Image 1: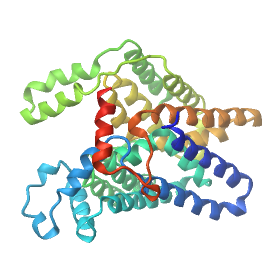
Image 2: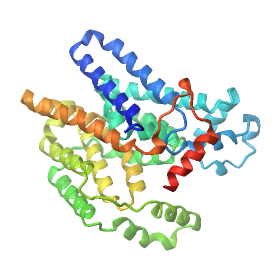
Image 3: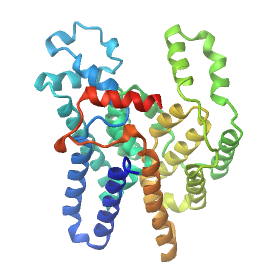
Image 4: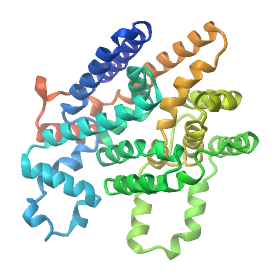
Length: 379
């Protein structure tokens, strides 16, 4: 509980700010500023928490200055060119990994705030949904991917406006920070189209059958092509497949929540579309749910792939509140979302590697934290 407490308090703070913002509209500008500042203080000044810092910190320290960067083999860092150049520029200005993290956080929160301001009226509620649905992971463990996702979020309006050039341009910019953004490019052609609800329901049922009966669909597909892949690609795939085959309970609280969310989406599909005159976020949430279930045999692959589409959840959960006709049903759903947010945060942030530290209040240095990190992994 102690490890998860700072994250739970952060989520609770955004719940309180959301309530105040709902009832005190005139205070919204102040609350929005508070929400952004809190986010920057919490994530921008974080210490070595969760996992990816163990690889990012030494990689950042090994970056050469700009004058010699272009004579180096960039492949050894394993980063995309846009992120390497960005990191090298920051290191040229200041040899501080902490400042680098702060700047990444500021960029993300600017892009994230811009996205939420386009689609919701209560900003802290958007932040709460973000943190609950993979936002903590995105903000701590997916340094390159976080910038890539946030860039893409600001390309979404161009899908609705049917402007392919700025959309593709932003997607390619996002790809220079993380190659997974290539998955966003095809979305332009179908994401905002109305789904045949019976086809969508059939696919979701099939995905559930694959999940419940542990049908190894991913391994089966890869085995068909593995012989024609390059050796380096085969090694990369093998590493991911062997990383952590999914274990644990099938019928978990998380699974029941996804089942509830999908049920509500199918029940209120037309109403959700009518609220925004768009099916974009509804379809995105269904993609998230189906990918998570289809790839569930491998937890890391399932989580990282579905995370690309988490943004649908952040909007649809808020829209579902307006779908209920009766006030009591709205209160019940909001209560469920708040309670689930706290429980999910507790579940995701209880490990030793999640123990929160903030450089403003003193934190462990890299060597000390690395020792703790390795001990945690060996348990």
